[in-house]
Amino acid sequence: MLEQAASGRIVVDADKQKLGRMASRIAKLLLSGVEVVVVNAEKAVVTGSKNSILEKYLRLMRRRQLTSHKVIKVWYPRKPDRLVWYTIVRMLPRRKPRGRDAVKRLKVYVGIPEQFQNIEKVSFKDAGLGDGISKSGRVQRYMTIEEISKIIKGGR
Image (cartoon, rainbow, N blue to C red):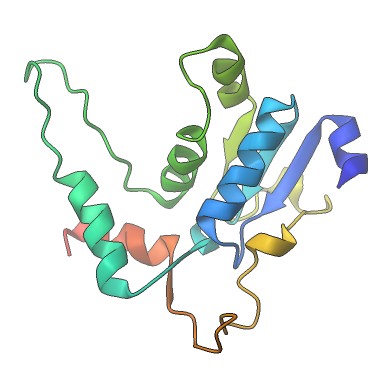
């Protein structure tokens, strides 16, 4: 991974990666000046029970804005790649120049585009889902971003 960081670009495979941990690692890389490309965004996972995950995302979608109805300021993405992009971007200091520059260095794709087929992809060890068993011995419940996106688009 350090060799790729020296070249200025890292390609991250989001397959079976926990969204929050992966996003925080990517945010740190972006702030350090590395260009990050995320592929297979739809295969990233959010852990927890299905009801609690959907409750959280649907609550975010039902938010009301308290300002003028003519200018829409409350927005929440529905596509898998935009959900992952939004999660990463919200971890950056967007109002500072350093954060705005970091956002420009982030690209997120559903699937693997042709130009990244033969490039070595990075996965974060601590963000991986592993064998699906938590440290306490329970089976981890999770949903993929693709499943969440389909339910959000349909309205449940």
